[in-house]
Length: 288
Image (cartoon, rainbow, N blue to C red; front, side):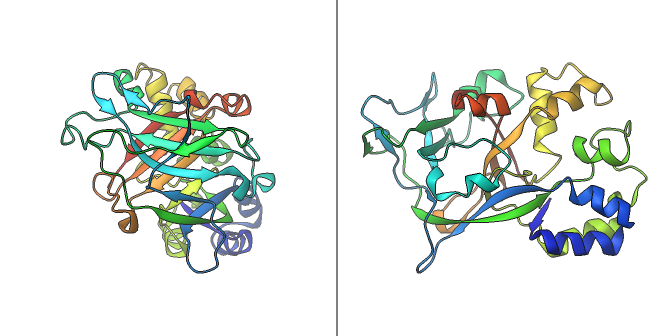
């Protein structure tokens, strides 16, 4: 929903909430790494687009029956402040994000969280720092995105008041995904948060900056095959089992446009992240 320094978010919360509620809300903030286009002497922690560096033994990711995936981003884990984050990222190595973006079929086949048959259309590869790699040319038929270097900055991130974690803190039992009667849902507080900064942006870890409803709920619905209602506690429990791995916004500099100025999201269960099972990361995307 928004991001910024802890001090700025604390000050804003104290202006709109009681001291007790403000401290409770601040306790729900999570550290995330914002990725911005690097300029000048900025340290580079990754890049959008370009070509991936892959081990000789790794094949280019393919969605069977549809074709190769486009390369979206490369993140150097050693360039991230992993010690200050609350997810168990590798301290070194590279994360590579791929997505079937419609170049090969003019957007006919979509990768959707609710469609299990499409899950192979998005992939995360982890390349350990001791693996020998070489830049790989783009798969046939794919035009690489413009390479854009990224620099990393640690910030605190806040999520929507209808996110399961916030709802549980302020209104247990309130309808999932909807507003409820509490000041954290007031229009004044929501407007103040947006004025602080509501850009989706590129990010590793922290609370996802969802374009629509929280992406964790979307992921939970997909995993549960859409078979539970929004008032079923299993949906909230499942949503709480996923954390943001990476999100990548539409970006003019890289000539990336996801739907109508949307964003791509990869989420993962903490236990899979700890075991480096990146093949179990799940994908969704949202646009306005």
